[in-house]
Image (cartoon, rainbow, N blue to C red; front, side, top):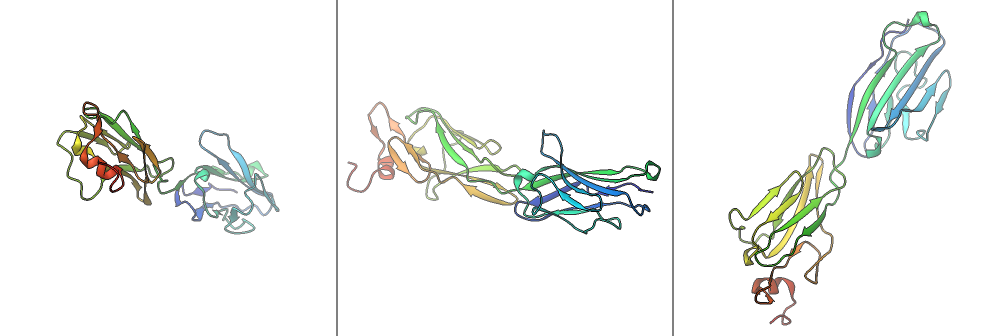
Length: 245
């Protein structure tokens, strides 16, 4: 008799670590036992990755990435280990145990496992939206393409910068946006964004061209359209010594 298959329904593992998918069963059948493991990425049909019927077969290039915890998978242990889990391994894994005689069935012969591979945030991309002129509003955006659990974002100015004027900005840590209202000299300086979750953090460091100046981190240049020149503080930020007058 094959009794119910027992699994750990949810497994969380850090990217690059091994993931153990526990699956146990109980049967008195001496022969005719088969084991099948299937995998389905989110929104896709399940595919077979392992099959055992006295011999072990691997399907869809999982050999070398998955191993049986007990080989052969008899005596009630059908668990497997995924070696060096990748973010693309996140999905639904199914352990299916069967016997050839239908009279041997008692309870469920399969168990479902939700596998989630956790990853720290990737380096975010920072951009400026809008025209950075005196009196205008602009939005600084920040986005990481990877990160699980979902990352939060925080914007920072250089350490010596004075606080921004009250009610002059709106920061959304969920989307990574920083809205700056009614630009003035008080906003001039460098802005960096940090994405973080429980596994780590990363800051934007890509090069951006703002107002014709190339900087290694995000630089906001404010242009006084009425006077036709950069503010004195911005000249110090943007121009090498003895060039700006």
